[in-house]
Image 1 (cartoon, rainbow, N blue to C red):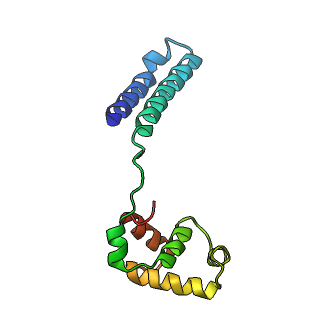
Image 2: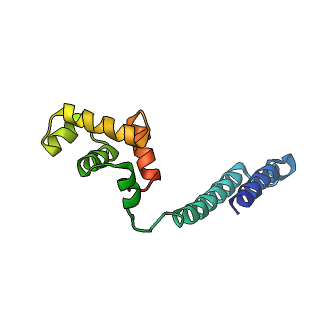
Length: 131
């Protein structure tokens, strides 16, 4: 449906571009018509795209969590990691040393078979471990 709207918009712009039509109306009229067309297209796309937002509540995949062997503390670290906290901030929030957080993260990386923070978060979200 959106491809049709884009196609019709392109057709309308081409049609407006003809020299014959340009001589019939002043330039400000064409500018206004183009602005109205793109406004309508933007409103239509915004309404349709906003409907596709997932409104289902998050359900943690406890089976995958237990199958991977992620401990409750490692899960807390993973949640803070997904929230974007640095190691020092996670350590401060959990009341442990940054080295302990690094150890937990290395274990989480091993269990999720990843090498980086972003990969761990993406994998955990893909397995429905975190929202």
